[in-house]
Every structure is written in C-alpha cells, then in structure tokens.
Length: 361
Image 1 (cartoon, helix red, strand yellow):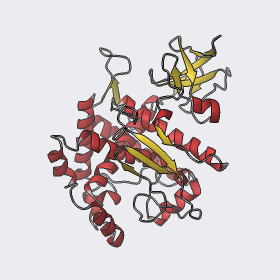
Image 2 (cartoon, helix red, strand yellow):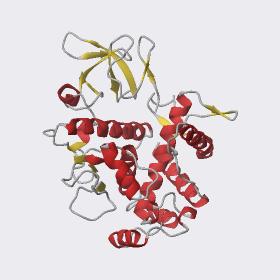
Image 3 (cartoon, one colour):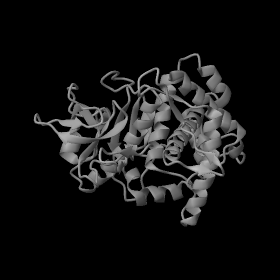
Image 4 (cartoon, rainbow, N blue to C red):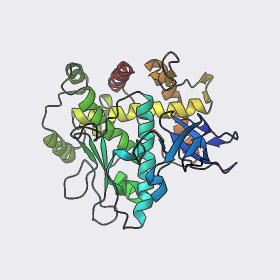
C-alpha cells in the first residue's frame, strides 16, 4: 500500500478523507488508483485536484461515513465501485455495528486496491448475477467470542465463499472476539484483511483455475480438489494437521484440502505484494538491499497498467522484510507480524500463483 500526497504536500494515507494540514477534503479515485485533494464545485460535485475531473461522494460516505472512494460524475451509480459490491450490509440498528462495518470496509478496500493494481478481474453481481463477486457482512447471535468461521459447523454465520459471494462474520471486526477465536483455533495469525484475502482466493480459483486448462497443473501442486471437502474438514478438526505440514503447506489450515491450500497460498501472495509495496514506498533498505516495487508500471499502456515484478526479486525482498518486521514487533513486545516458514514446496505454489497473475496482466 502506497502513501499519497495532498496538493499542499502533506502525506496522506489510504483511509484518509481529510488532509490534517490544509483541511481539504480528500477522496480515493479508483480510476486513478490515487488519493486526491478535493475542492467543492458549484454543481455540488467535487473537483479532484489530481486530474481536474469531477466526482461525487459515495452514498455510504454521505449517509454513514464508512467510505472515502469517489464516483466519477459520468457514472450513474450512487455507490462507488467498492460499495456496489456489497450484497448485505450490517444491521445498523445495533449501534456498535457502524464501527465494525467501517473496519470491514477498510479491509475490503485494501483487498480491492491490490486486486485492481494486479489487473485481476473484479466482476460484480450486476455483471454476473451467479458468479460475480459480492460481499455479505453478517453477524450471529451467539455470546461474545463464541462465533464460527469456515472451519466450524453450526448455525452461526460462517466466514466463507460460495459462487462469488464472500460472507464475513461481523465479529471478525471486533478485536477481542477475533483474538479469542485465534487462540481457540491455535492460530498465530488471524486478521480481518487476511480473511478477505483468503476468501478472494476461492473466488479466483473458480475464475482462473476451475474448468480451465490450468486445472491439471493446479492438481500437480495443490492436490485433487475433487476429494470430499466436508470430510476433509471433519478429518482436520478431529485429527489436526499432519505432523509434517510445515514441509508441504504454508499454514496448518492449508493442509485441509486443495481448495484451502490454494486460498491460503493466494492470501500469502497478497500479503507479500502489499507489504513489499509499503516498504518500497517508505524507502526501506535492509542489510544493504533496497526493497524493490512489487509492481512495475508499464508506461506503454495506461498509467494504471501494472505487471508483477520478477518473483525471485519479490520473494527475496519479502524474506528480508519479514525477518525485520518480526524483529521490530518483538522489540515492541508484540507477536511476530509474519509467523510462518515457507518451505520449498510452498515456495513453488507461490511462484505458480505469481505466474498466473502475471499472465493476467
């Protein structure tokens, strides 16, 4: 994730809707992949000083202050391209849900930022009612901290994916409940953004692998997805991961089934790309090595067209960076930022995902 700059020269961050130096309104322009300072226009729209084009505020900004993405005036939608992917929003009759929704939207927009910059197709439910990407933000009615996710069986809301629809249990945005579930599941890493990245992996498996000529190469690396998924879940829950899981899978949960192996590896690839971009933007240099940009802008195309950098360069930067991040976290008395070891087998799976994404660019 990059930082951005206001017209006044002040640094802006992805979530900002105001510059705290010059007090201008700011908004994210999805068509430019940039955050821009705004000036009010006489017709009620906003002039983006970045490109001198007019935009409207997203309706979810006007009504609820949960969004900072802008809508071009030529676009008839009242919602931005991010918010129009929402199929179900939280029940706002419960006061705390507005705060939780805001956190969910931040994580979702960070996911979309990376997907768009990787030139991956984001097809809405309007475009494809059966397999387009959509989001449901729901909550269960169990006691605090006793919520389920895609691993568990019950009547609670399950975070998961089904034919393009990504469901997020709203309690994942409640920090105490999420940490409690992380400890209960014996996980070392569990974040709201991580859920979005993981579930998007299921969406892109359907889009990029399923019923394509890539499926055989996928099975050679990740296993046969035709094996009974529910039985695989039950086995994982009853017996836990194999003792040797670190030699083959990027996480314990990845050992459950080929679909989960792909989704976990996909999520880790997005972790790498976004974090390396942040480090590059801040000018990180580790043991004499500059952190390189994970995405390269192709100026022969449009200014928003990117191709992934070489995988070896990306991975080398990630290895150095993740070690430094973990050391910094320990210095602050916090858990490791990236508590994983990437085996040669997992590395080949990451390389495979990089290759597929590069082919899409």
